[in-house]
Length: 171
Image 1 (cartoon, helix red, strand yellow):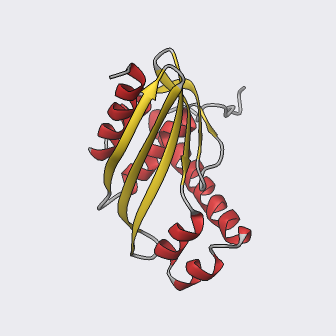
Image 2 (cartoon, rainbow, N blue to C red):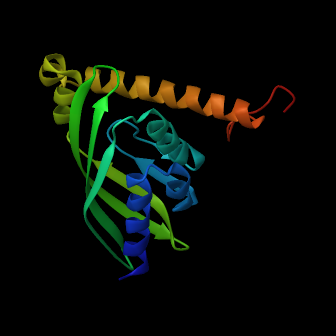
């Protein structure tokens, strides 16, 4: 097995056991992550997104369907099954992922899934109807970004320092 495939499998094994710290250790410090809801996360933001999502998960099941890796990068197909907390609706989200590596760690991670299919499951009839329209996607992205920002602020306060990239009043 190529080391990149092994790293991908390590990442999803950690995800399946809800170990966000182990997932974050698979990322290069300069990682770039993008998916439909979080389109542009860099560095520690990506690890914090997983920390946030896993801290909220009550019934999350992650299944790695397939993974491959070689000197050029890697790919995976995985499925997340969970209850969307805002509506209590069950979601089965099938995701395709692409990876690039630096120094044996994931430096680029792109997840793709159809937003309209997710919205129909997570939001019900409203999501099924409006999931095709960009304004709903923008609203979900804004809510997700706000949630991540609040999570990062709480995490920094718990650790006694500002989130990466933030300046303290004395700076």
